[in-house]
Image (spheres, protein in one colour):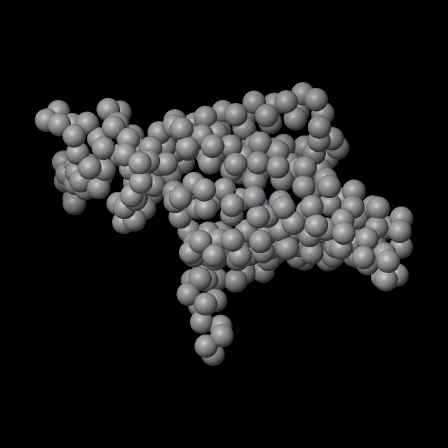
Length: 270
Ligand SMILES: [Zn+2]
């Protein structure tokens, strides 16, 4: 029992198996590609597993794990609100495994588990997955790296908007230069476009969640004298008010107090 206690502490959510497995099994049997799809599943699961492992090391609880046919997807609480250096390592941990897979496939070929031409095919697939993941488009890993960099120099909301605008430009370039082609390419482009739209729509929600996280987890570090109306995620903010400077924790307490008052004034039912 003792040895599993860390799993219970780090993983508070649910394990789900996606309904896409039904489609996947039909597709795999029909196209006779079960073996290759299993290798893709392995690559993507190890990729995601490294995100989770790095998240566990830095105490980011896993909210939910979904097992898709194309890999395991873990949703972590508080990601995007905490320490930027730690989150950069969590993001980089996933794609970095694709630099090791070529050696693994070479070893499989050396011990005759797979043929050398099939090894080259798997290495090509692995490289495609790696390049796709590091594209600077949110919510891909490359986009999350851009997000971390933006948060290290800009206030929260501006950093979020900059990340999404950079993602829009890069998505347009992908489309313009036909980087992704065929039906699969279109599905991926539409999926990424949809994620960016959701990102814009949830800007205010993300900002409130960040403030809430920050109120519950006060940070120490380099002070930032801030005359604006938004917090810098990378710094400990000293906010300017009419009557002088104020610590960010106090500023956040006032912020939430004011919001509660506004809600009471606008909704007579509360
Ligand atoms: Zn990843």
